[in-house]
Image (cartoon, rainbow, N blue to C red; front, side):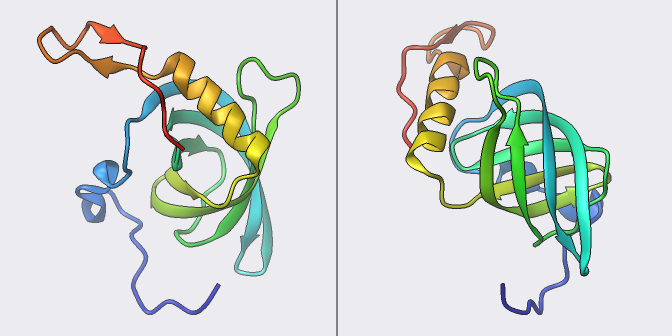
Length: 143
């Protein structure tokens, strides 16, 4: 990863509009994960909760502070899997307190399939002519 000249976004006031940057629908979730990476030449290992998931990113509430731009590995306790789903490449996009978002890097075919199946079974779409509390799960999730 090369040097960055931009100032990292680290406060809630600086995050205006950050929650809407991710393309595609987000699926609200609550399951655990572990994350690890290098931050300022220090090994960082933390655990937390996946708060939302999309084909390209994950919202996390963790027990260890992270810095925008660091690369990390994720070990997600995806429901329906016996072993945690390992995503070797992700990068922290934004941070506010212990809540942060990561952009997923290149995924192996098996990782893509597990995420796609989970999202297909759990993603919700508002119906065009109904109250937002009514959802359909019949749409495919592109990866």
